[in-house]
Image (cartoon, rainbow, N blue to C red; front, top):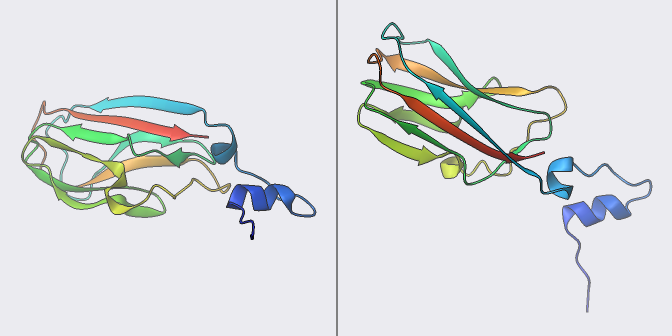
Length: 139
């Protein structure tokens, strides 16, 4: 019977051995919590930085964003793709969503640099309506 190898095992057995990302090898889970309370002056095109992922971080399906009714639309992403985590989303009613809804669990922060996750506002945000982020990742 043939034997098949995962990407990690293929990299380890390569000659010379290829680098195995820390996020694939160690299984150390990190959880960062971030909160933002709008001041009411946020409007279309404004960017709100929500959290930070280090090099080689891999987002886990437990990551989520929870929000109060902010009376605005937004996208969630990073510098490489402003809607990588969530495309244009109506957050005018309280709710939440997981960051893996677009199938981005395989996305890893590359060696080019760390990534800041942010939301881009469309509309005007309501003052004192909280946004809460839980970033779960390995690296």
